[in-house]
View 1 (cartoon, rainbow, N blue to C red):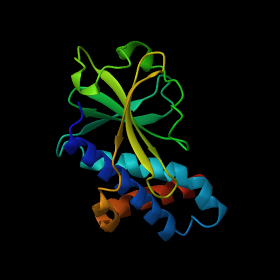
View 2 (cartoon, helix red, strand yellow):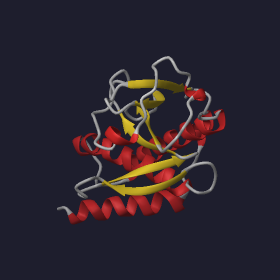
View 3 (cartoon, rainbow, N blue to C red):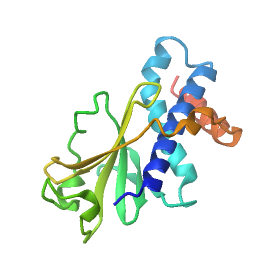
View 4 (tube, rainbow, N blue to C red):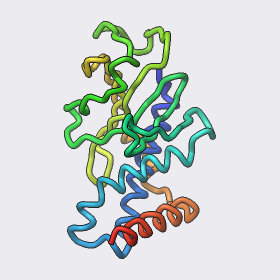
Amino acid sequence: MFTLEIRNEIALRVQQGYLLANTLINESKPFVGWISKDAFPYIRKWCIEYVFWKESNKDLISSRNSPNKIKNCNHLELIIDNKILTINHLQKYEILPRKAKFRHNLTLEYNLFNDLDNITINKMNYFQIIHSGYNKVEKIFIVCLNEHNQEIKKVEIEVEHHEEANSITIADEIAFPLKKEVEEHLAGSQ
């Protein structure tokens, strides 16, 4: 269902997001002491979504920005082969994310023992990219959930095979606009 090429691309982009978040935290004046610790989860989320958004439509993964049901915030949806994926961070990767309204009607329920590669897709399916770690990726999974928020299948993505993400120099064209946006947001909230 998700080829090795797609899994490698997901792992690389998640790692690039972590690297970009670390770069922004370490090089931005507003982020010192406890402020950086409090802000880091939000910046990590923004950076991971930014990397996926910036690179979307260039290869196998496209994206769209979608508001939640009450339209008070947005989230990035990735589209891969007619499947929708969202990105979530969990402190403990054994715990599933909270229930989300969109899962109720828009997922199919499959037998727990079906192989994810053999599932026939009749409509859009919803999956989550789950990552854990604080300032470095520890684990990445793709999880398929049914409408009862029960895990149907979890596929771990090998993180250690993506060493090129650790040596990537964040291009100014990516880092500068995001850094500027974060700093303007912080300045406007004071």
